[in-house]
Image 1 (cartoon, helix red, strand yellow):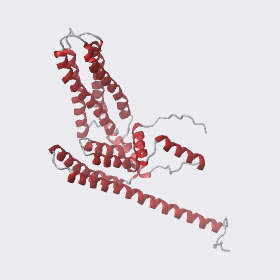
Image 2 (tube, rainbow, N blue to C red):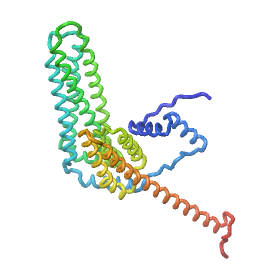
Image 3 (spheres, rainbow, N blue to C red):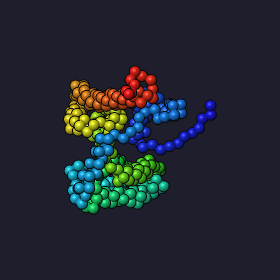
Image 4 (cartoon, helix red, strand yellow):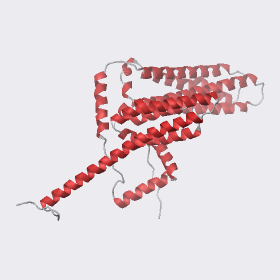
Length: 354
């Protein structure tokens, strides 16, 4: 049978989640999509239910009404204040590192690699850093402060992670490139080619930040339930080095992506106020044990227990919801059958009187 190429776009996070799920099932993404397409072609239907969750729609409406009531108030929450400080600190570190490298370049060092470094630090990266700083200032200006609470802050956290990664990379380049330039005593300048490549890679990282900022500006907090929970888990798990705990957390994230936004509001409130805080506490204790260099098995076991409890809450809620849907469907089918018998549309023991 002839094969054809099919191209389409996916949200990056959706793609990562599907790749992980397929990996656990021993499938490739191509095989998974082929199974889906085959089933749709044979059954002439989407092989799973697609419907709006009423409680999520109502939650969106409440958030929208609350946003309208707050419109005009220029308040900055502690979380946003902390985010602003983080972004501004990263921006300041970036500007400092670029200035330090640029001013330390000796005039005696020539050649293409060093000219590229001069241009990157003195012009290209400097301009991109200024653009990022301007975007942050505009974001937290008085006229925008009242709108930030309506956005998906997990996307802004992703932007902050990218800016922090750039600052860290430039700091490492600064601490190695400047001594290398001072130690240079003539000869081949090709030794600086690796630094030029690293700085060019930093420039590409800057370019990748702009779409993230656009995604944040277009986002809404109404759609941020699962994302916000996953962002909290990732932040708590970021310093953890115990591999099997990281694996358990990845599986939990996949479960949250699939089912969290369909949980009832009461369960979501319990998850975020109780279960998630317990998980964050156990992860913090594990991180402290890792840093102390002691036995981490006990703390890791507590983390796994917290992950299992949280996973069970989500799975039980899904199972209960499915059982309720099945019972409701069965009741509807029974009622329709009785109505059909009464009308005489189908045979049965019941006949209309008279």
